[in-house]
Image (tube, rainbow, N blue to C red; front, side):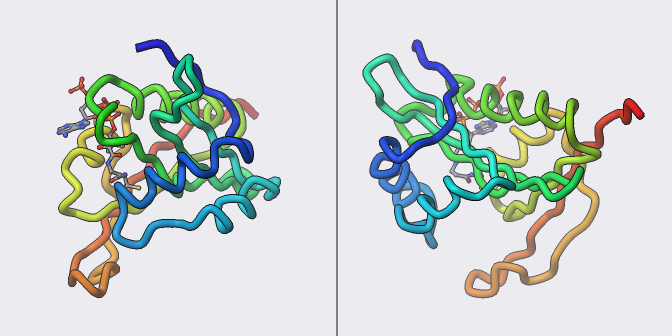
Length: 150
Ligand SMILES: CC(C)(COP(=O)(O)OP(=O)(O)OC[C@H]1O[C@@H](n2cnc3c(N)ncnc32)[C@H](O)[C@@H]1OP(=O)(O)O)[C@@H](O)C(=O)NCCC(=O)NCCS
């Protein structure tokens, strides 16, 4: 499967919104995603196939040297082919260069995502009890720290 990682732009929004709806119970709208495009603290990356198909995408918010992975998702038909791993590795390279750590919250039942994060070096550092109230589910906090160069 040939694809490249590119910065998200307006041309990707309708496809990203469709993947949001396929992946999440509380999907982000195209309007919300569009606002994020113009936020300097946010890095949005898309895995784009040769024909322009969006396979998956990710979002990192960076405040000073603290990064949060806000989102990572791959369209169901393109999963288990390393797309999320490539997106996350690109954020780890960004983190290595610019951040002290990259952190995230994940549902404790989300085994695929937790396996992905563990594979790439994230470790569980805490838990938010009943964070997902509707489902009475805890969030795990996972973090990877970067070597400081200063
Ligand atoms: C989690 C998600 C992003 C993974 O995307 P993906 O492109 O299929 O993942 P990759 O193919 O890059 O997998 C990389 C590693 O993650 C782990 N992994 C991914 N999917 C997995 C699954 N279904 N079961 C177990 N491990 C899994 C494996 O360790 C895998 O490495 P391997 O292939 O060498 O075993 C995808 O399942 C998804 O979009 N889920 C819905 C959205 C979501 O929950 N996002 C995270 C919360 S914001």
